[in-house]
Image 1: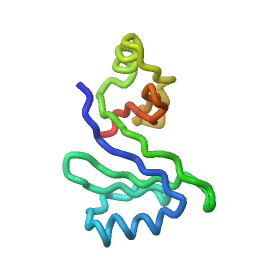
Image 2: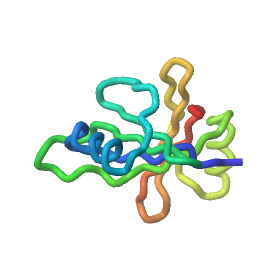
Image 3: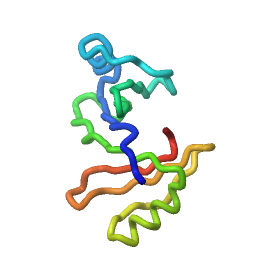
Length: 113
């Protein structure tokens, strides 16, 4: 079963967005991963801010991340049903797999809770 674990918002100005999500919306910052990433507790889902652009260019649309334990197996199952997820990427213990819905919206499978 898939559960939404986070929505990633790509930011041109990460610090400006961080101030908004922390000070204006009042979301709690979770442990920082790196300078280009901020993650917030938003109840049943997390909202992550990812430095993802240069100033003056529009940021990418948000990405919905589905958490699953076995990324490769879920990828195979969903692709057999007609989805289009690419290769599984490995970054240490983190497994990620990117795809898109039929209208081109970004999706990701991840073993990160």
